[in-house]
Image 1 (cartoon, rainbow, N blue to C red):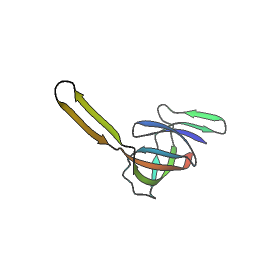
Image 2: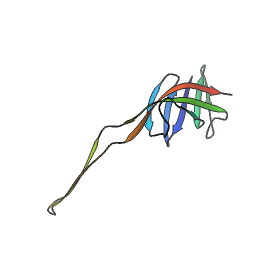
Image 3: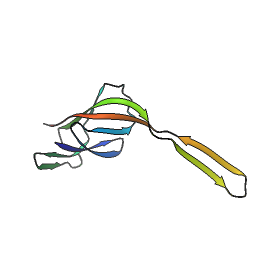
Image 4: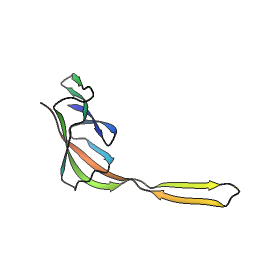
Amino acid sequence: MQAVIIIGGKQYNVKEGDKIIVNKIDKPSGSEVEISDVLMIKKDGEVIFGSPVVKNAKVLLEVVRQTRGPKIVVFKKRPKKGYKRKIGHRQYLTELIVKNISIE
């Protein structure tokens, strides 16, 4: 069974057992997250589309860990002005594992 879900404004194509990395969700490791924003479900060759979401569809996810992404260096410079600015950024991320996809 596959599903397309929305988490944090982004869409993810998931199936049971998949690990996905999303923007930070404020939940401790080991806790469960239930997502009801399911756009599509594929079950036994049958595809169910929502308008905009599939009614009574849920995806159960478990938080594996909280982590951070790779460092991104932002460097700004204005030629002939003596202006230089170098800063870095690491995005906070949450690793999730898909436990169950259900439709009632």
